[in-house]
Length: 178
Image (cartoon, rainbow, N blue to C red; front, top):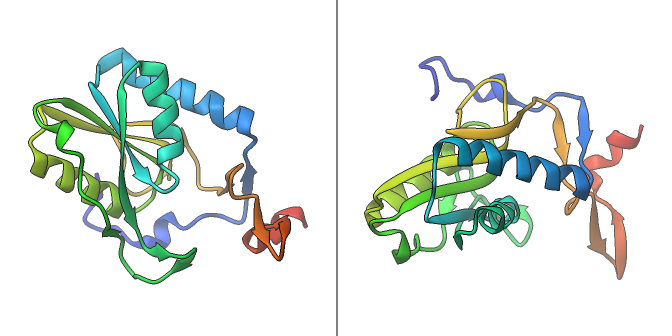
């Protein structure tokens, strides 16, 4: 959980880059599923849309759980339009009286996971826990994570984007090639 002296600057990504391949991301999802399975047996997995649905669906498949999504974002149309994340879809009713695992790709400040937890708790689950592929070394800590890092992460689905009729390197990562 966050300490009282939390400051967003304490968890800002570093100038280091971690360029993830699909294979590496898949291995991290498998490792995360194994960590969860050691101490928790969820009935359903809820992936936080957009990017949390990717590890969420993989983990649900590995653990043989039903999968649902919950859209929480600062973005619309690929652009940041809100200072804080907002819930844009309801938590699945199927979470009622069930053991739930909420999955996101990363946690930094914990704002998104806190919103997801609140939304899911409103449905009345038997138990709810959180898991992320990545966690920053400072800041909010989910119940489970695959890797702690402060590097700027380049996800395989985000490395190249569609622009002007073709795939181009995402402008956010041009410095990673330098």
